[in-house]
Image (cartoon, rainbow, N blue to C red):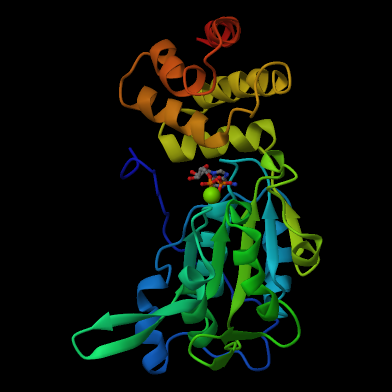
Length: 301
Ligand SMILES: Nc1ncnc2c1ncn2[C@@H]1O[C@H](COP(=O)(O)OP(=O)(O)O)[C@@H](O)[C@H]1O
Ligand SMILES: [Mg+2]
């Protein structure tokens, strides 16, 4: 059974792994000097299990080699966060993740003056730490942040690669290892909650979606600990539910939810009950929809 409720079942580092051939001329290893001590907590030491779906790993490596800002697009629970964790491990770069929300301000990203016993002192925010010392900075669900917050990333995403700390009167020139990555769910976008074109056009983008049947079953089995046959049935249920999207369901049933179902089953919960708790009840309050989903479950269990 995997460790912990989020099922971070990182497998052993693959011996076949060879570092990417293309190295940025100015790239430095993350393991020298004082800066690396600061970033040490952000290094991904064990390989996060990631099952590649297409050529996203190679494309991301190429994007990183030129430090292209990247945007990971796709529905919730389909592997975006896991992918960036895996890529940070592959590239041997620290990863600083910021979960964006609408109360977040530019200061939460770049930093602020703090008052302490000796007066005021400046504290870099996560974006400033990443830019100064050379980490991958991952802004998760970036559309949740207000647009006046997201514009602070602009100067880091063009040729200048700088971050102005206006309150401090300093201009950080981004470390050669620094890269910015954002994720967002295009399904949630509304007129009020979308990225500005001026922001979007600064990024390369990778599309994520629920993986194809056999691959998704492999992921569900690996992450939850159920056998492949049960995992396949869970994926069938997921696919049925995804067909109801737009006909009463706002969001498809995610890979994450199928893993939840699998982990309850792997822990001895009866499949029907496990599916109700993890797949059906969370995504609908509508009795008819609930019945439709329940009957999809009984088809397979
Ligand atoms: N391609 C994949 N390889 C490995 N695990 C995956 C993959 N896609 C999804 N997962 C699993 O699904 C879970 C949810 O994915 P996550 O990366 O958190 O989704 P997102 O960030 O897109 O909302 C992960 O914790 C992981 O267990
Ligand atoms: Mg995520």
